[in-house]
Length: 231
Image (tube, rainbow, N blue to C red):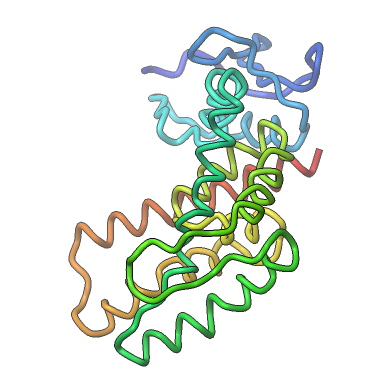
């Protein structure tokens, strides 16, 4: 799509801030008004549009696309999204430890257990197991994590969804959005097993691309949440 506007800026809207292309507000794919409550987020979205060259590349409008997803998909399906995210607590990555080799098991213990301990104090204790056999978690623990997820507003819920999906761990995603760890630490922690294998066998091109994509998603979730909270 060719660029059809000269200037992208942000401005006041009835219930927040909007991105304006030559003074006209943009809309979501479902034709809803794209309005956010955070000036910082609106300003960053406007910068995305302003940075486009003669050809608009929608894939580069990361913040705009996620904000639109919130309005079109997250808000109408809020209860379903909360349930999908909270379900990760039943099989959280950090709860499944390797039996062998001992070096990997130690890395997992050293890297993962402090975050599980933090989450246990902050929300509820999750039990760990060795191997891949499912470990049933206490209903009251799962209820505590579901309550925590449900406490996020729709914008933060979208960021949490992106982070949890990319990390494979609700504990890591919560730690990221609460500032316990940054995006780089979250990615490295979630990729501990993969990094261990790469050290021994190397990394193929497809795996590298997949990891790069996950890293971008984690960084997007962290940035989106930070901008929303900045107000």
